Structures are given as structure tokens and as C-alpha cells.
Amino acid sequence: MSTSMADSFSDRARHVLKRIPRGKVVTYGLLAAMAGNPRGARQVVWVLNAYAEKENLPWYRVINSQGRISLPRGGGFELQVALLKREGVKVSKAGEIDLDKYLWRPRGAVRSRR
DNA sequence: CAACTGACGATAG
DNA sequence: CCTATCGCCAGTT
Image (cartoon, chains in turn cyan, orange, red):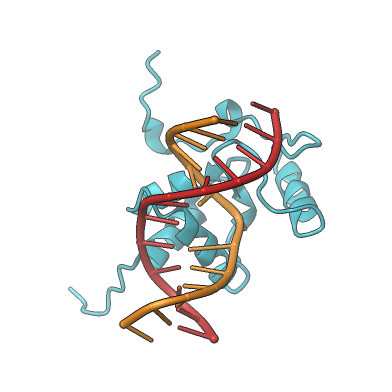
């Protein structure tokens, strides 16, 4: 195949990010894992800062493992909450989101043992 | 090449 | 529940 396949973590992370459905969210760590590096949560942050705006990525659909908004008040928090609510995601005043309800589970990856 | 930087995460107290 | 600390990893300086 082509030799120009970057295949970098950043490329994969951005790719996954674009697949997050409206109204759903993923955690930094989960996104990193889906991109091939379970421990690349911090790289995800880097990717978001580096490409989100440029490539119009749904950066606001990424939250931390505790189900909370990571951005600080006055530093993006408000905007992220607004964008999420706009997609139907309920966000508490403290910035908490119900992961059981909104976490994106690609292809029933977890096989919800019914 | 060493040090630094993050919107993190798991763990310990 | 909360703060502190350490480990991770790629991109920057």
C-alpha cells in the first residue's frame, strides 16, 4: 500500500474522534485506547489542542474518566457545556455527565451482558 | 539531548 | 469527597 500512511497516534485519535456520534461522549483514556494506546490520555489532550480547531473536531465530546468536564471555568468549560447540551447531553451545574447514559460504546464493545 | 508541557488516570491518604 | 503524587507519552523548546 501507500508508503505515506502516517499511522501515528494523532492520526488515529483524530479519526476516532470524528466517529463519536452526536449526543455521546468518550473519556480521554478511552479515546486513547481506541486509538491504540490505552495510556495515551495525555496525548489526546495534545491532539485536541493541536487539531480540534483546525479540523473542526468534536473536542467537546471528550471528558475525563470521572465523567466530568476537565476544562476550567472561564477556560472553555462554559462553551463545552453549551455544545454538549445542544446535542442533548445533560450536564450538571458542576459539569458532571452520566456516563452510563452518554458514554459512547462502539459496537457494544462491552457486550452489555443482558 | 534534557527539560518541560498538558483539557489524564490510577492510587494513596 | 478531596488533595497530592507518580507514571504515561508525544510534541516543543
